[in-house]
Image 1 (spheres, rainbow, N blue to C red):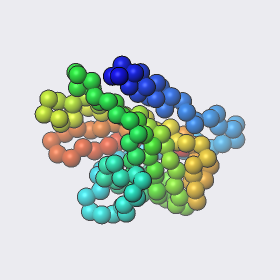
Image 2: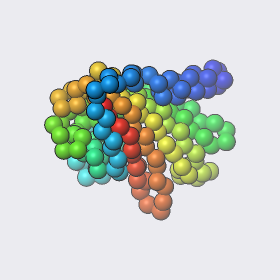
Image 3: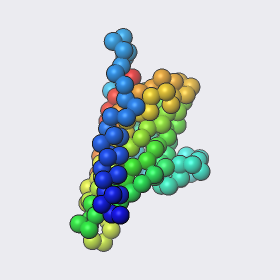
Amino acid sequence: MKTRRRVAVAAALMIAGSVAVGAAPANAATTQVAGESYYDTSGQCPVIAEYSDYPPLVMTGDLTGCWYTNVEDDMTTASGFYFETGQELFVGSVNGGAGGTFTAVYGFQAKYYADSSEFRGRRQHPIVTGSGTGGLAGARGRLDFKHLVQNGPVTYVYRGHID
């Protein structure tokens, strides 16, 4: 059972890197984005029940708004590696433009210490083509998050592109 689940999670992580990210038309503009995010501890982001597996992230930098997570599968290895896949929702704007939403599939990989604190982690987020609404209608691209683990809350640095 564990082997089948590991194969399924590994396949999902490979697919997450390529699913829903089609080639952009030659005339499409690519916007490079970067910034930081952190868990919302002040209630800035309203709760969205379908995406409440983690507290929402407050997005700062080129993306401003809230980032929500729906975990679909996870697995921890005996050596402490953790793998997770799912879908996420961004509600906000890019570079101060018109607000909207888009969803992304994601793959998350992390290594934890024996005390369950995170040693390092990263996530890949291909935007689901056709999922955008409002000012983000037609959004596609990919965002990558790196977890900066220090003495205190984890900061999530992101970078990527949105077409």
